[in-house]
Length: 359
Ligand code: COA
Image (tube, rainbow, N blue to C red; front, side, top):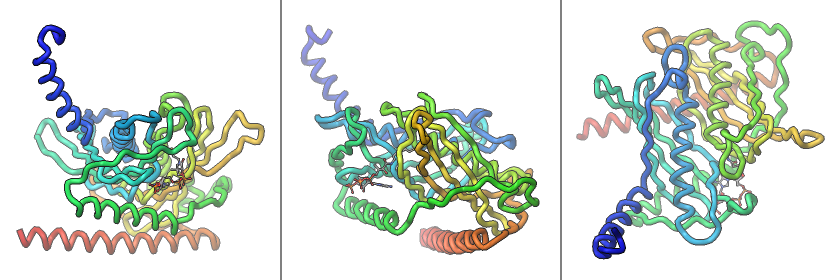
């Protein structure tokens, strides 16, 4: 067909190019939430959403980083900014995930992702998450080589400037935040109820091909799903009720995890307020091929969980019984973060209310 009518082919090519360019800038994923995405009360796991968010981010970012000649590359997740779960998503809802590249530095890309839930029986749509992720592209030929990111087009100089400020802010935050490198000891036998040891939980996983990128390293979303699972088990053991993820603090992915590694993900209760629980999660990886197993810490994060009653209303949680100086210190750290987050949330609610009144 193209050979006989070259003018048609040219027109189609032009249309194709415009469509392809538009598709390149944004990405939409959409899927039905199934029973295995949710807990026994029907609430979608935070980890399921984090995995979908990361999938969208890694596709749009890898695609963008391969738009120029040179090394083919795969984008790896380097950081997720603090992410809140604003509204629950249930089995039977449709999750709409939209991703957009919003800033590019020389070697990193910021992707902003929004998630909406749609009840296809009632037509009700709700914004459930807004997340910002940073990716770094690695050469497909040499996984140690970080390649340069092709520049992106900004709508205005102000938009570029805002992006640069976010880039500088996360860089500063990374410099100030040290990864928690302490050993996580197994809990003592028969711990007392509501102590840290009582709910401490671990999950051990052998990294297989379906967990990995084209580089044979674990997808960031797979790791976050396991982290959320462990944090959820820890929270449920503490309060024995239906629990949901409320938020995840900023996560930096320090080290890659290779296919064939054994990953140990541990959740440890750090702090409880009246109606929330803070759980720190440690991801340790070890190669079963190396003689000394080369165990290393790959990621750490703090998850906040809320306990819900059968009407999905927040319930008070049992206070954490801290034992010893270390637990006391971590509790105080958690408390300071909780108060800071609460103040920030109140301030942003006030701004929203003021904006609504102004409208
Ligand atoms: N968040 C956001 N960007 C990050 C980052 C982070 N945590 N760490 C590094 N970067 C960016 C830097 O800003 C830099 O970009 P720039 O030059 O445009 O400023 C780029 O990455 C390279 O930084 P560099 O200092 O050379 O790299 P590094 O030695 O600190 O390594 C990673 C950074 C991300 C490559 C490394 O920590 C890593 O491999 N992490 C694991 C990635 C992964 O496997 N993800 C899935 C985990 S399950």
